[in-house]
Image (cartoon, rainbow, N blue to C red; front, side, top):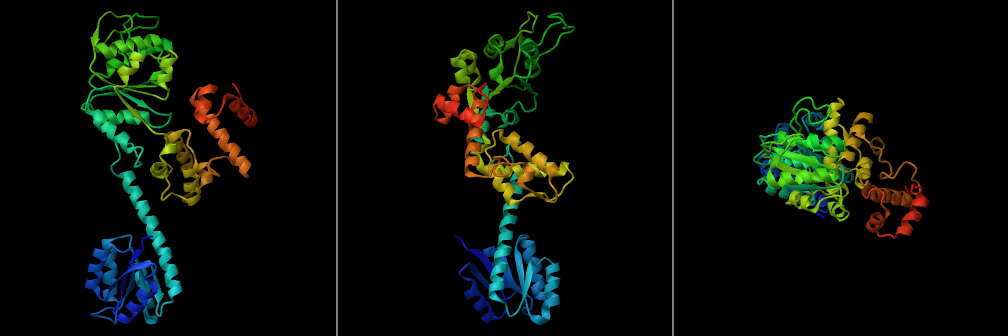
Amino acid sequence: MTKSKLLIVDDDEEIRTQMKWALAADHEIFLAEDRASAIDTFRTAQPSAVLLDLGLPPHPGNPTEGLAILSELISIDRLVKVIIISGQGEKQNALHAIGNGAYDFLVKPVDMTELKFLLRRCLHVVQLEKEYAAMQQLVQGDTFEGMIGTSTQMLPVFETIRKVATSDAPVLILGESGTGKEMAARAVHQKSNRRTGPFVAINCSAIPETLLESELFGHEKGAFTGAHAQRKGRIESATEGTLFLDEIGEIPLPIQVKLLRFLQEQTIERVGGRQEIRINTRVVAATNVDLKKAMANGSFREDLFYRLAVVAVTLPPLRDRETDVRLLAQFFLNRFAADAKKTNLAFDPDAIRAMKRHTWPGNVRELENCVRRAAIMCEGRRVTAKDLELSLAGLGPNVTTLKDAREAVERQMLQQALKKYGGKIAPAAAELGLSRPTIYELMDKLGINRE
C-alpha cells in the first residue's frame, strides 16, 4: 500500500526527528526548517498534508513566516491540509491560521495518538476531495459529444464513432433500451462533415403503420384522404445532414422494401407521386431488437440489414459499466440539483453502494430518472439510498432474509430476460442457462404471469 506524503516544517531539529520516527510507519516523511526549504520541498514532493510550526526564522518569535508559508501552500494546492503545531502561548495565532485556511491545530507538546488520529481524518478528507474534483473535471470537461464514460467498455465505442464519422457509410447502433442510442447517433453527426446540416430523427415504432410511409417519404396533394397539400417526408428533410431511424426493427416489410430502394438508389418518390427525388443524406439506424433473429423469422429483410449495418456500433448496458455509474449519477445530480434550486448535493455512502449493486435494467435512462426524483425528494444536502428508491441494493423494501434476496434476484433476472425476448420462453431460458420446464416452475413460484 502506498504511503501518504507528509511534510514537517519546524526549525527545531529534535522535534523534526522525533515526529519523523513516530510517523514514518504510516507516512513518507519530508522535512523543512524554513520558508524557502518548505516551499521547495512542497512543490517537489506534493504532499497531501503538512505539519507547520508558526514560529520560524528569521522571526521565530512571531507567526509571520508560518502564516506566509500557509498562504503560499494553499495557493499552490488548495486541497492541501495544513495542521498547525503551536506553543501554549500561540493559541490565538493558531486560531488565526485556521481562519486563513489551516485544517486544524495541536498544542505542543503534541500527543502522538491524537496527531495520528487527526492525520488519518484529514487524509481521508483529502482523498474524498480529490475524487470529487476528478469527477467534476470529467463531468464538466471533455465529454464525447455529450456522452459520458471512462470505462473500458465505452472507450472502444467512442473510437469507433470517431472513425466512422468521417465517412458517409450507414451506421447501425445496437443496444438495450435506455443505453443512449440517439446520443450515439448525434455524436456520429457532430463528428462528421455534415454537422452543419440537419439531424432528423424519427422513432419508427411510435408512428402507426398507415402513416409511417408518408412520414418517411412525404406525400403529394390528394395522395390520400386528408392530404390537402404536398408535404416533405423526414428523409427529404434530412438532405445534406443525417437521418436517424430509431427502432428500425419495427418497420413493416412493405416499407422496408422502399427504404432498401432509397439506400441503393439514393432517390425517393413521395406517396402518390411519380417524380424521383434525389436525396443526399447519411443514414444512421438503431434498434434494441435482435435483427439476426428477426431475419431468421422473416420479419426483417436480410438485404436491408446489410445495407444498414456497414458499420455496427454496440452500446454496452449500464450493468457492464460499473465504473461509469457514479460518474453519470454525479453528472445528473449536478444538473437536477440546479433545476431544483438546491446546492452542494452529494450522495451518501449507502446511496453509492446501492447504485453500484443495482443492475439498472432501464440503463442510463433509468439512472437519470432515479437521480432526478432523488434531487427533488431529498431533504438536506445528502442523497440517500431511500431517496433513490434503491434500498437494499434495489431488491425492494421487503427484502430482509437471504431467501428473500435470492428470490428477488431470480425475479429480476427472469423478468429482464422475458422482457428482452417479448415474453418468449425458449430464448429467455437459453440466456439464463435453464430449461423451459425450469422457467415455468420459476414463474409459478415467483408469481409471474405466463402470458
